[in-house]
Image 1: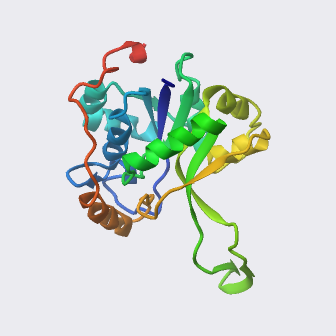
Image 2 (image 1 turned 120 degrees about the horizontal axis):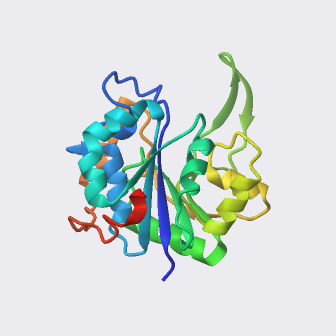
Length: 244
């Protein structure tokens, strides 16, 4: 059985969420923090052997105060991120155990992730080395300058990237080693740059990324319709040497 490490990206600024009390991954959704919903979907899998959550240095003290019990019980490693998303993921990638086969990167603010979608993208990554969830763009796209439309963009062949994005560990390490501070907005872009094709697995609009308060309300309704993950109180890798 292939083994996986999961990196939860939670170090963003949440500037559009506009909540003075919470950043979006740490907001309460259905009685628990958004990031915990995301984490539990992966921790229910036997092949996930390591989980790392990346938070902003500015959030670390507050995160520890609120969630130290959760990360201890679940065996999750917490590290501080960098200025950009790729900086944060790169720091987490450096902490992935050397015996891990695949690395999965997931937005902590995508809590409505179904186990079936995870299974599908994991299976595709094992076949091809690199896979991500995505959905085809259905709406009419306009390029706008200021308030004026400058172009209508053909939507044929366009897909919206989602997470999880899953890669062979050695491939993702190569992609980050050759990044050279390239401002990538997702990990698939870095893997594309080293010449490796990335397989797109159809996801769902339900797998939304929480950006605004309205998204939080939509996610709450979506979660009510989704099966809950089966998660033991103490996960098998809790308490190992991940904290060292």
